[in-house]
Image (cartoon, rainbow, N blue to C red; front, side):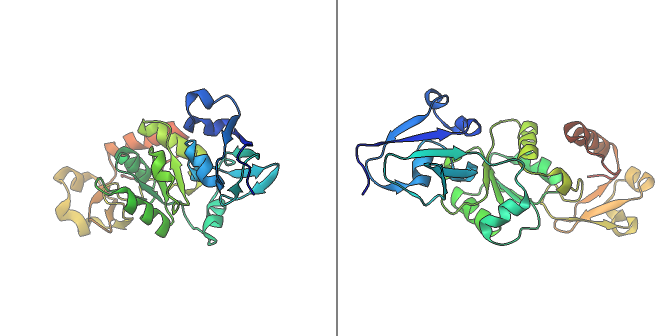
Length: 257
C-alpha cells in the first residue's frame, strides 16, 4: 500500500534544473503523492522530460521509468553522462544504431541547415505537426530536437533533446557537447536543401546547369541525389569552411557545399 501522508523527496542534478521553476532549482523538492503513479509521470509533472534523464535511483537503488512511486521515497534524478555515444542510444532500441540522425521541429530551420552542412541526416518540415514528429522520431530512430519540453514528454519518444539556447550556432555547440558528433561529421556531403546525399559528378554531366564563370574555372562538382542541386568549389565554401573550423577546430577538405 502507498502512503498518503509521506512526502517523497526528489534530488535533481544541477544540469536538469533548467526545467524546474526558479524557486525549486537550488533545493530538494518535497511532494505529497496522493496516489500511486509512475516515476516518469511524477518527474515530468515538475517539468523534466524523460529523454533528458540519464539514471534514476530510489532509496539508493537503480530503477526505470515505470517504477511506481507510493510516497515516502528518496528519489535521485541524474543527468546522462556526456557525451552520449551511439552505443548508449542503441540500448534504448535493443538494436545497433549506425549513425546519428535527427528530426527538428518547425522552429529549427537554421539549425537544420547547419547539421546538414556537417553531413548529418536531419529531417525538417516547416508545417509538420507534433504527433507526426514524434512518430517519425520513434519509427526512424531519430533524435528529436526541439525547445518544446512538452513534445519530449510523449511516451513514444526514446531519443530527444531540449535545446537550451535560441541561437542556431549555440544550439549546434550544445549538440557537439552532448553527442560525439565530431568523429561522425562529414562536412559538405549532404544537400542543405533537401537532406539527400551528394555524389561526385563530372563537369560534362552538369555543364548545362552551371553559370558561365563556374563552368570556366571550376572542375570538381557534386550533385544531390534527391533534388539535383549542383555544388562546387567557391568562395561560399571557403566562408563556410572557416565557420566550421572556428566553431569546432575541424580541418575541412576543399570542396563546395
